[in-house]
Image (cartoon, rainbow, N blue to C red):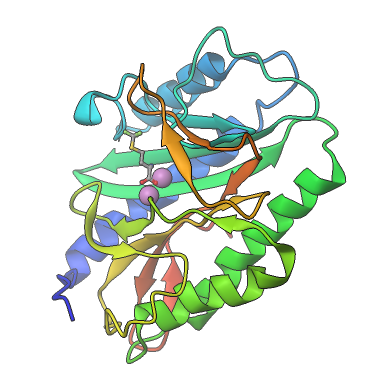
Length: 255
Ligand code: MF3
Ligand code: CO
Ligand code: CO
C-alpha cells in the first residue's frame, strides 16, 4: 500500500480551475477538427488559447517534449507530436491531450474524435473506450481500492470486444506536478493497491487498441510517439478526478 499525498482545500480549488481550463481548451481545439487541418495548426490554436487564459501548456519542454499538446492519430497510442506535415483526412480518429498549468496547478484531459465519417469499427472503439472510462469513474469513492474501481472495471467491461488494453502507460496522480503517484493501471492487477481517500487527485486515461495486442513501440527517432506494434487503431479518453468525502468529482468535465 502506497502513501498518496492528499490535497488541501486550497490546492483542490487551484487544480479545479486548471482542470476546467484544460477541458475548455480541449473543447475549443476539437471544434477546429476537419479534413485538411494539420495537427500543428491544432497545437498552435490550443497554445494561443491556453496562454490567453494566463496559463501555460505543461507538455512544452517537459522532458524535452517539443510541442504544447499531444495529437495521436489512428495507430498512434499517445504522445503524438503535432506536425505541419500531418494533415487530417476523412476517416481518421485523433486523440487530443491537453495539460494546463494555471497558478502552478496542473489539469490533464484528453478525448478521441472522428474526423469526418469514420468506419463502424472506429466509432465503436471510440464509444466503448469512452464508456470504459465513465464506468471506472462511477466506481470511485473513499474506502474502495483503486484497482477494484479502475483496472477491474475497465478490463471486465472491454472483455467481450477482444481489444488490447495498453499496459506500458497508465494514469497518474496530478495537480502539483504533471505526473505524481500513484500509477493508475487500466487492467486488473489483482492487487489491493491504493485505498481511496478524500483529497486524492489522479487521472484515469485508458488506451485501448482495436486488436487484442496491448504491446506498443516508442518511435526511435523522436523518442515520444507511441504506436501499436501491429498497426491497429488505438483510442484514449482521459479525465482528472478528485476523491470527495461522498464519492468523486470529475475536475475536467464541463457542465
Ligand atoms: N498528457 C499526457 C498524460 O496524459 C502526458 C504527455 S507528456 C508529453 O499523461 F510530454 F508528451 F506531453
Ligand atoms: Co495524464
Ligand atoms: Co493527458
